[in-house]
Length: 438
Image 1 (tube, rainbow, N blue to C red):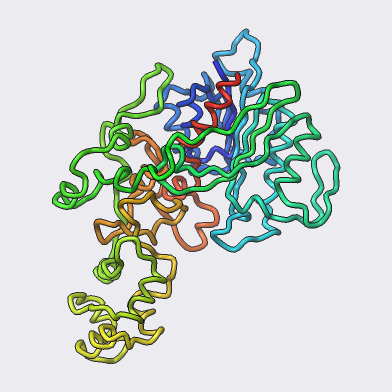
Image 2 (image 1 turned 90 degrees about the horizontal axis):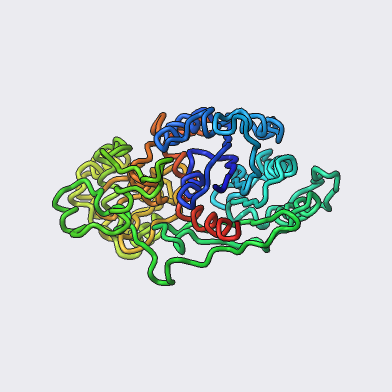
């Protein structure tokens, strides 16, 4: 049996992949009480029972030590009167908001230094192999006055990967050259680039990064992923005439329980759709398949757009512009609308996009209210987002479905749980390489 520890585990995408690869998760940890509910529920579903054969610790990693981890594992029922085994793999994805290029990068964000705490825990647990996953922005984030756990003071401007590799070397680990992997290359129907670090304890053989399992140009598409989840029966029957293998596998289940059998999906879960007004629905209908808001704006200016059938949008514009219906229709149809008038029609958001059915999804993020279905004038359910991440349909996300405002800084609702996760099939591909060498 190969044993693993999953830190910063979130809802459990990484753990899913490890279990699929044949690892037993002995210990896992995250700071959020909201992900704890989802994570522990899933593990109970798989036969991983708290205190019996696994342990989840809700903790800030700054307060987590190798001694605590060892005590929790030693207390498990499966190791009563037995020697605690070596940990074969420790995997983790420290919080990435400060590194992300998707938003404002903040060099002073305290979460940027969580990878240093991860190194500290590695030094205390001494697993055979280690993996760290993060966003691409991790590659070039610079630090000022960074001091490592061994006391090394790094020059101002040192980048994260160099610091990380140096710190790991100081505690007895060799590392492979960091590599950016695209989840779409490993059977995930999503374009998602992540930087991966792999390391190994001194004296052990080096692992390898996984080779792509999907040939270039053959990536799974959004239709492959969620075509069977289209709400409108007639649209679904036309767009998804035959279930894809990915859809079938998602329902049958890929992740085995303790008994070795995957859990089938007994009912559709996490399929609730966000409520939306008629104005929002009509606004979504203006987008062509694959079109971004920036391109839609250009099209309105260059070609004009016919909104004569969009009654709710016309009424909104009449009220805002103090015009009658024919005047409103004319200014948009002739391409004479001002930027301010286009803002009323579309809102000032410029990141909204209608996805393309025959391409992988864009990168799933924690706020999914700006993605539009290619088939219907709506955003996506939690289950559809989870499919794009390669979660099984039997994986149930619990807690609040979404949140807003300042609560987004602290709460981890279902959409965020999905968006923050490591795609299970990507984690599986990485874990299989460690399994081979073990």
